[in-house]
Amino acid sequence: MLAADDDILAKAQAWKAEGRDVALATVIETWGSAPRPAGSHLVIDGEGNFLGSVSGGCVEGAVVTEAMDVIADAKPKLLEFGVADETAWRVGLSCGGRIKVYVEKVA
Image (cartoon, rainbow, N blue to C red; front, side, top):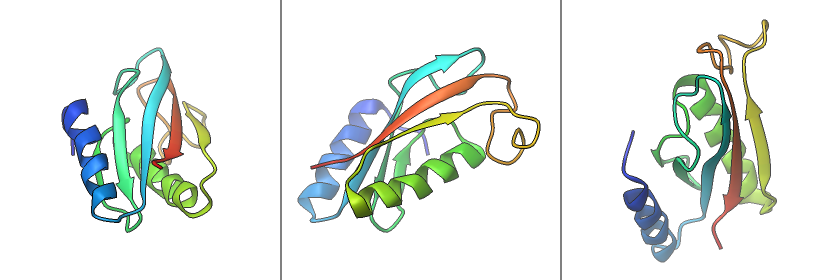
């Protein structure tokens, strides 16, 4: 689900206030054709609920999965997605671009 970045950050704050564990994923770099620009956010809670977008499709599913690990161990991760022959349609960007996504637990 897409939402304005202000809404996403407000939702992260609201979820924390409710006592939920929360991770924030941020697009920090793009190259070529990418679905979402740098600065785009996705907030994920400990139950896998999410709001926002860092890419869409399979990439977003992979980011949610990685965010669950970040919530569990509190260690941030830098994720990279791009086109590779074997992954373009699985967890890649079929549009030809590359993105880097930083995922961190919200304290």
